[in-house]
Image (cartoon, rainbow, N blue to C red):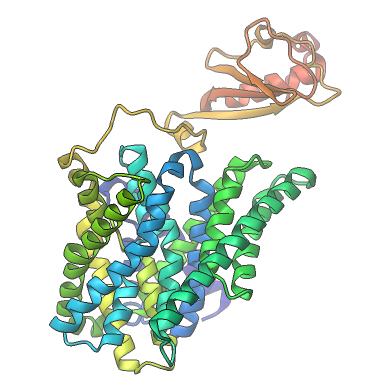
Length: 501
């Protein structure tokens, strides 16, 4: 096929996936299932497009996961997760170790897998998926601390699981002591790189005046990948580095932070769509039937044994360390809310791409993980609101963090305009009431000399002020013209025939 056909196909898939997000949002299903379905549809058993390159899938998958983690860090509020960090770190380290063993032992005994493959399967399934967790949990009115634990855990636990899968996929598996040392070393290096790049990058962005505001979001995402690539070059955890760097930058005073977050969200959605469609194409539906029963058994062990065991052990540890205390209801919800998504499927490509494992065994592990993710995401995702309500954990009356975004304003059919008063503008000296804006528009906030305040009708506008104007979509054009007219001719612009066009 020619390039034009590929572009048309790719654009069509992206548009269909965007429409599917709306369907998934209403139904409560994680959108990854629909995206995987698209991949299966255009793959070998659908439209017949062949994609059987696990090495390329692994490389693309890891880069896409880094983008998703960067977006997760940029859009996570530090105030929201700060108190949850100690518990999340325990879940992402000790909890991951417990989960690996708790999956491997029963799988070895029940399914007859050799120990290496069983441990590898446990490591692949140990990570909760950031994209799946964010897409479902950020819609639930959960207590801030509980939601923060799940968000932070999903951001942190990718790093140790990737390291574990890499070690178990190597030609010669290291001893337990060497493996633990490598895990700790990579995590420490990754954390150090991420925490070093973010402050330096934020400092530079605050002091370098870029000619176009659209360059700032690109620079922020590039800095996140500087952390990722730098950590990898130093044999550290790139995933931990990119998440920490993004978390620090997203909660720092940097220029155009809201725009950077919005840009990262868009890129992350594109990465998710491409990643899930690619993984769907990589899967072979004809090979899935043989993996259904083993997958369901391994998934049941994961959901009913491994995840609860990791939560219980982690809860006991944080209680002994006196950093947190989880009651039985919170532990039950954390056990059920450990959603798996793209991460396990991407991790399953690592042993498949490695030459140290039999190709048949590696493909079977991939198919088994694919079945587990699809079935148990379909089972767990839509039931989370019911489980939260059943356990008495929903808090509909609790105040939640407020963010000014375009989407809520669009739901209200309104727009938020930012007006900067240049030095030559005749807006200088005009009082708010003299703007004579339509009744459906209001100057809600003024930023002056680094200080923000709500203006009164008698407040005089000054040069270099930034005005935030909320207006209905129907009045937006009128408001923009009125502001331009006054800026050119002053408050008597109408007498001069200035229309602001």
